[in-house]
Amino acid sequence: MQLWVSTEDRAVIAAMVTQVVHYPRKKVLRIIALGGKDLRRMQEKFEPTLEAFAIKAGCSALEAWTRRGLLRLVKDWKQSYIIITKDIKEKMH
Image (tube, rainbow, N blue to C red):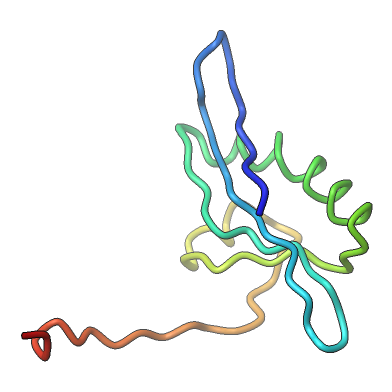
């Protein structure tokens, strides 16, 4: 896994964790977590660097498990699949 940190005036303004994932027919750079003060600026700063890193690592794509709202910020990305969840808290003892 890789930790990416963006700073401005010696303050952390954004951070992200990625992982190179090997699928049977391709390798991708997956964004595991990201956060910061200004997601639009963060995307503009991180994406070119991420793409270069992914290409160097032999990845043919970037992927992120995220909420749908992020699609508005990343114009050339597409929704490939949906992850659904089920809350089971009430079954815990």
